[in-house]
Structures are given as C-alpha cells and as structure tokens.
Length: 118
Image (cartoon, rainbow, N blue to C red; front, side):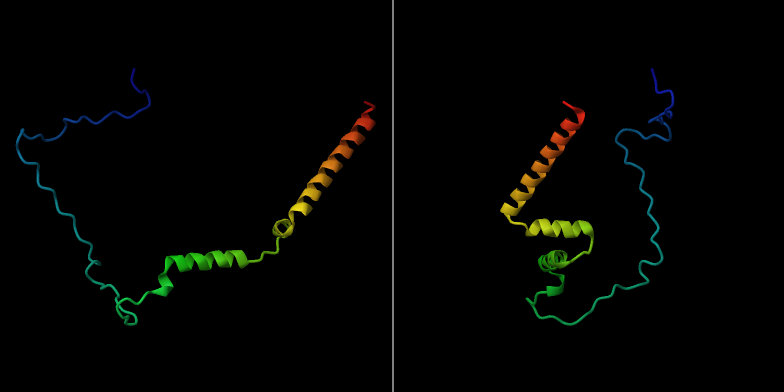
C-alpha cells in the first residue's frame, strides 16, 4: 500500500541522459554580487609589538569578569532575599529549621486526628 496523502516521487530517469563513461555537463557559474568588491575591509587600530597580548579579548578574563559581576549583582526580589538568608545559615540553624518544620507538621496531623475523632 502506498502513502495516500504523500507526494509522488520524482522519477530518477527523467530529463536528458548521458552515456556511461561520458563526462558530466559543465556546471554553470554563479553570478557574483556587485557589492562584494566595492567595500574594502577595515584594518587598523593601534600598532602592537610582537608578543603583546590583547587583554581586552582574552576569553578567560572576560568569563571571570562576567562571573564576578553575576556574583556581586544584588537583586531586590523576595526569592533572592530568601535564598541569601538560606546561604547565610549555618548547619545547626538549618537542622533546627528542619526540626521545627517537622514538629509543626506532626502537630498539624495530631490536630487533624482530634478534629476527626479518630
């Protein structure tokens, strides 16, 4: 069964053929746009001595500067403030907070059981 909604395939043997061993037809040349030769590329800038590094284009320095800018960027959002507060917590403060949350959950479960008379 064929594809009912598909397109018909193009026959590979359509068009003008050639004999075995004959060279293929020469390719036609593409036209060159007129604006290619009109403008010359700009080359210039301050002269540099041999071996002088271009510190402005150093990828490592640029990545380090970007990471430092992200780290020092302060946002005033509520979520950012909560995240900063969590980062400042010590391990004991984090454990105390988790224990407090567990205690509150147990108390809520007990209150729910007494309300349902279980």
